[in-house]
Image 1 (cartoon, rainbow, N blue to C red):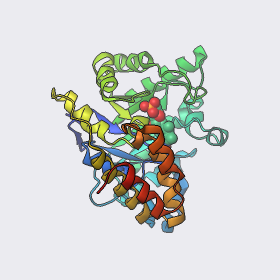
Image 2 (tube, rainbow, N blue to C red):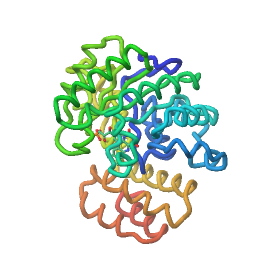
Image 3 (cartoon, rainbow, N blue to C red):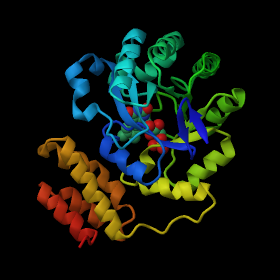
Length: 325
Ligand SMILES: Cc1cc2nc3c(=O)[nH]c(=O)nc-3n(C[C@H](O)[C@H](O)[C@H](O)COP(=O)(O)O)c2cc1C
């Protein structure tokens, strides 16, 4: 059992923030398949300063998806703290501060991963946000800004300060900001931080695409837990499979095509409730490759479903390829 303030995780994983993906529909499905905690994709703190925006359905947690966290991006400690408080008020159970995002536009605006070069801004944000919140607070970082030795030292120094300040969870993505998503995640760099700060709740992230790898990382690195990201896109079953392995049970049988098809249709339907019709199909299309991975005719099914133009065609293709009858 892992405790993040008042939140209890009965298994050591959560669904990572995934911008453009982890809206309520993906989060709900993750929960259904046994994921104990999920996060929104990263949101710019300034959204919270617009009361109309924060009240919009898209930014609100659903009644039946708790515990759920919100992840925030910003550059000014006071604004991030105010945004964190506003998101707690609309019902999020934990706030995660993003100091990891490598997107060039974000880095140029001195947000996300850029702030790894400004550790004092990170610490100031941590302090102010903690004061503004009653719910748990977590942070996401990468293993440094770039591959230079000074960057790695700065990262180690930052983790030391974070451990001294105290935070409910620190998630470390095992790549540098300049690596973006290239190469392999450096799990030794993550493990080193956990060894140096045994009392800090350290979650690792990077290249967790299947349940066996997740269990292996948990067993060999000593981290408190892991964040499942790309491995969960179009694949909520990864949570049930990982849970079974961790609990010493055999991995569940593959979901039938029928079950996969039903989940796809439900996912699409839920997206349609949150977004206008013209956006729903393009948004859902991003999940199709993931959902088709287990299909015996993976490529063909994927191409046919992605090619569907209208809502009706998309539903018809899923129904046909996944034998939902
Ligand atoms: C499409 C996409 C969107 C992402 N969005 C976010 C985000 O909003 N916030 C965040 O902290 N990380 C984000 N990440 C990073 C993931 O949470 C995760 O740390 C990273 O993908 C490494 O894990 P993986 O290799 O298992 O996918 C994103 C990654 C991808 C691929």
